[in-house]
Length: 150
Image 1 (cartoon, helix red, strand yellow):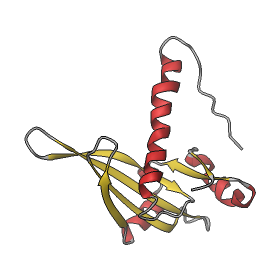
Image 2 (cartoon, rainbow, N blue to C red):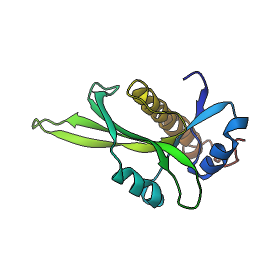
Image 3 (spheres, helix red, strand yellow):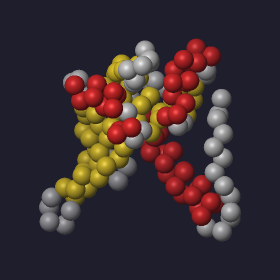
Image 4 (cartoon, rainbow, N blue to C red):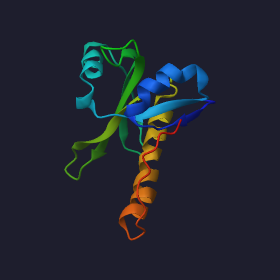
């Protein structure tokens, strides 16, 4: 991935995909599955590629993805979907499935780059959680800036 990847709100995904030829970056966007019925219906009906690897904490990480799937019925926009779960060992010997998340991206997902895409998406969450939320909620009185990036 030699292009700068950005995490942006799903709200702008349609604009990103239609403006792609003018942009110099790709996007990895977190999503809430129940808000995108068409996408999730399409993902459920297709065969998903899958790998199992290790998470940063050395637990089993399961990654599933589908490339070139329809995002909305009202547009011709197609996207790539990726989801990941971490299996955390418990004291009783069982594994607890810890939900990681679901994302869409314009990057083609392969078994070689799937973990890199997940790590990038999770890094965004870590930065946001540890920095921005602290600034907003722990006495700094800084508000979130909801402006559009492009």
